[in-house]
Length: 414
Image (cartoon, rainbow, N blue to C red; front, side, top):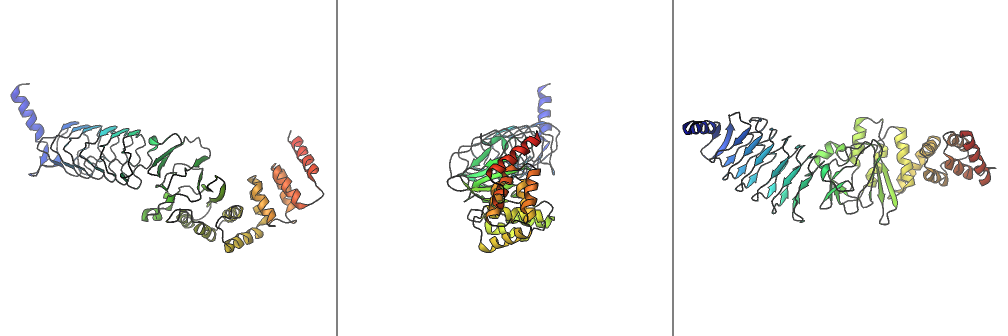
């Protein structure tokens, strides 16, 4: 190509950029996949390479020195794989790189002090981010769902402001225990799920839990301090209560300073209508000052319509009567007395001999249901429960008789 042809080609390329008198790039009309912006550009306008109005096929972009600002959603939804940003850059707007599905790595220049709301939201393949040393703020949902993100150099200082859900579902950043904890806030949890029950023991250092940390797990038991973390309840979370804990079969266990489990909450709302289920989930959150709201939890009992759900709650609260008022205790006892046979079968079926002991000590189970429950416990081979029932029934069976009975049952099984 002659020198004249090269000049004409360069001019033709420059004609693909619409730049106003203030140096604001407002549109790109070309068709290249590798683009070098002209030196006359000072600001990149919203959506120039974004999915709503812009050119989406750019794969590699070089932003020249002199550019000071990239406005909201400038590259949102594009096929961008690589971008070079200048040291002159001072501002990157909201959602600038959102949904850039093929972007894997990026270096943010030193002039940037804030990563704004949703800057990298849904960048599923983003693996590495180099931030300036003097970054002061990571905005809300800045790295939301960046599941592949493995490396990011966050300043080790409490002065760094991290917005809500800034690292939601950044599962590749979790530590060996499966947690991503920053400034005593739990942003993400990940544990290989083989379909079985997942056990989670939240460290005492955690003070708050971000949006939907456990939403990826169908069966999960969560253990935390009784002065448990704060689960934020913004307007959005009140509208969508399952953003707190998605699955209603979860259990929450609370330990004291010695590690002993002293309280437990299970929200089994299967079979309830959607409104009741949402009400239950809305109440299942911590007090504004931290600590689980057991009074609000007890109020759920009156909203449940399914007998099984009410029985499970009553059984659990009597087993662990932490912060249980006398009024609610009487309510739970009364309900169990009216359904003592079914209640007995539930705890026997679960093999929960400790709760069974509570029912026996509180005289909720009586002589009238002993034979039925003993027969049921034998049928499903819950022999510890059989022994408890026989002891409390105070019949002709003594310990040796029980041992013999259990031995006979084992022989029958063989």
